[in-house]
Image (cartoon, rainbow, N blue to C red; front, side):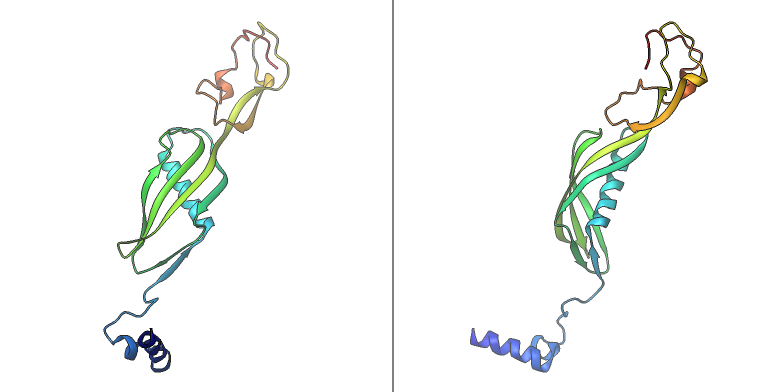
Length: 171
């Protein structure tokens, strides 16, 4: 213990090279990159967009969290490798695990999760449409809605409804 203390004191008073040797790599050499939670959310969003099998709408990420919330990478070549992702390709709660690397060395494992929603345009009735009535452009409006749990039969273009007969009353 006493030798170790002397070694640390020598490093403080005489400099790093004398204590550790001139061939040693000093700590914090190279580029230091701090990845905050905002950047982790961007990476999460990009992975979800690339993995999505749905095409309609605008992606909305809510309740994002990561553990850890911040990563510090030191090295010239930094990156990440995907370990796992929630297996289904539909909106909802998503989980991603990945490893961040620096100079081909694993530095930190990060677990991220968020609620994934999609918003898109949906055709709705602008007024009550009675049964057996021919649908006109004035009867319809387009609104942006959460389409995450809607199936592909939802009408997203007014042209698909105009000129058709309403089989039931629509409100």
